[in-house]
Image 1 (tube, helix red, strand yellow):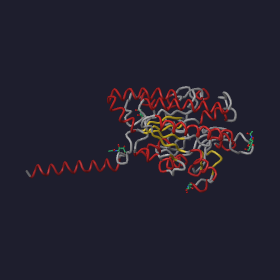
Image 2 (spheres, rainbow, N blue to C red; image 1 turned 45 degrees about the vertical axis):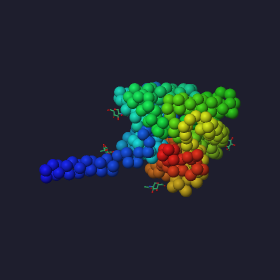
Image 3 (cartoon, protein in one colour; image 1 turned 60 degrees about the horizontal axis):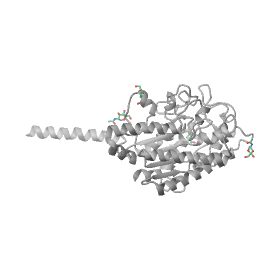
Image 4 (cartoon, rainbow, N blue to C red; image 1 turned 120 degrees about the vertical axis):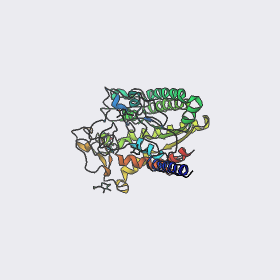
Length: 367
Ligand SMILES: *[C@@H]1O[C@H](CO)[C@@H](O)[C@H](O)[C@H]1NC(C)=O
Ligand SMILES: *[C@@H]1O[C@H](CO)[C@@H](O)[C@H](O)[C@H]1NC(C)=O
Ligand SMILES: *[C@@H]1O[C@H](CO)[C@@H](O)[C@H](O)[C@H]1NC(C)=O
Ligand SMILES: *[C@@H]1O[C@H](CO)[C@@H](O)[C@H](O)[C@H]1NC(C)=O
């Protein structure tokens, strides 16, 4: 009797302490949603492009990853973590693994989400040609359909729907399309029609892409607007005065307006369609215009690269890099530093309505 009780007590203590370990250690405490699915470009690529043999949009070499927890390059276009990592952290999930690594590893554990994001990807098929190979947005949605199919096999339709309807679908896409048209040479290779026609067709395309994701079961959309891409070092470098590329910025914000109209329309039209729109454009512009207010010292030049504004050469193993990555807004000629990505995701998550609306990410996740 005493023995049994002691044993019971012991078991309870073991269970208790392992729960404590789990609670302290795992993210499950703070887990807000069952899964995070990420679609997008190099701003959120966590290693998909490592699996694309002929792509030149790659970052799996130094000095990328210098401030990552492992201090090794991972395929992220960043000195450390990127926005996808911070999004996952905020939601209490591990970073969604790259879809192609999962396929490569013959793993099909997609239940807490997966990332389809790929450097060089655009809303249009064709941005990939600038980088020889990338997973276009349309291809990312095909992969998502495969994942959804596997989830249905594993859990049944109702089980899959339940996870997908609660999951956050984060979408960070469009910068490559805008730079492909409005970017100063050697890009600017996507020119088709007038600027207005080009941006209108971007809206038509993203609208149909969002509907495809909705039809596969996605309901909670975290739409990250295009940033002030005209201010990235590569664009400033093209102008003698080092000013931002105004056309790229103007049409990026035109696209953002059109995207917001689509989101409002879908909220009215599609049952249970929910979203947060994040105004990356103005948040990034704030950092660039008042760097000191956010702890930055350099908002024009890249940290890693070579030449004027470190924008003549990408962040390659032979490029130089700045000693303190936390005081630069830009890591390389196109991409923000970890410090910038952290501020952006913090604002998207907790953000005031001015920047994250009609709900912020935290509110969307809590629905
Ligand atoms: C605790 O975290 C470490 C490092 O993140 C991980 O390797 C380990 O598996 C975790 N343990 C549990 C019980 O979750
Ligand atoms: C795939 O397998 C490799 C080697 O075992 C491992 O290092 C890597 O973390 C795995 N990737 C994923 C996304 O599980
Ligand atoms: C450089 O920037 C200025 C100021 O924005 C602009 O007027 C000019 O057209 C730009 N030059 C080029 C070559 O883009
Ligand atoms: C690096 O920059 C950050 C942000 O400006 C600053 O807080 C920190 O003290 C700097 N670190 C060093 C070692 O100078």
